[in-house]
Length: 392
Image 1: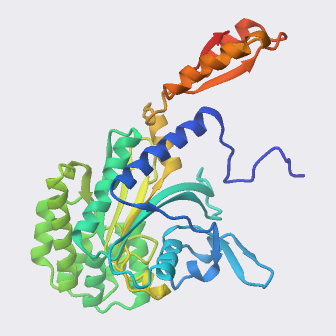
Image 2 (image 1 turned 180 degrees about the vertical axis):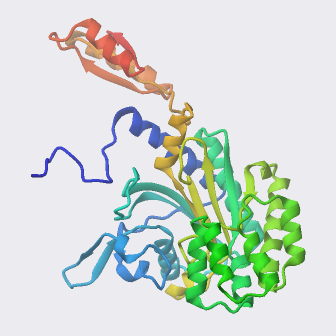
Image 3 (image 1 turned 180 degrees about the horizontal axis):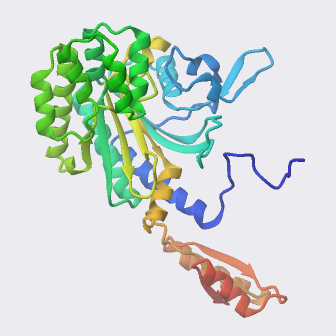
């Protein structure tokens, strides 16, 4: 029999200091994004199934939470924000040609059986820059990620940047069919480079192209290696992909942020709607990425509006894990409240003291003294929570 006191696998309750820290992290990231001119957008927690279908290139059907409305339409809880924002942009801004900047916050839901300690319900904050195909838009997205992570309290992290067009250009030149390309993509995304080498050896591919595909397995490429790949690329699509990475690197260097960046051509997202740069952020203490993003120039076209776009999501739960494991505090997480324990005859004085504290922007909690609870118990409870206790 199911105990009603427990939550299902993959979800959890949050309260007290942990929830406060989560809100502080979210607040600092949202403020950073908004400083770049992004405006909030709020899409539904569930959409029609086709918004996240295989044709769109998002989460596999088996990993979606599916249910039906009264008309028999299949609905799903959103596993990913980007297709929802893409649908919304196509609906309300179909004629807009100027850049659109949207940001959002909410929970996503993936019904995976391979938990491995991961949550099925996760909180994400993200942004999308629509109607801009330039390298400046790509660089802006990465700059926002770097500044947001620094403002959240993280000190050391690395952003790996890839470019899906390098891989796709070689596959086109080698005349690989879709099935072969997808199989090779699976080997590369899982970092199974021995498997990919063995698989490639079975294909009749020109030796030059084989060398270029194997170069993808080199993780964290320095700039000089990128320049060599640019010179050796034998098709325009791959060549332009490397050129774009080099140009983005120069823009980040001008902003003094290139030290947080490395390049990884083996990064090929499971979300097939990405069409250009792909980036992920990693830090100490967590095995999974804390930020995921990239360029998706064809996605909004699935909903009827051709609009080149770039964006990303911050995995708030993973950022919190990283802060805790590195013994760091979230922005404003050290703001403690004052507990004012008062007796009925001192209520007015307690109100005055609380008003003074709140006027300074600090939290104050009024607690009527229960005679069954000793002064020491009140003090110990407050100190255990890191709060200040004052008796009125």
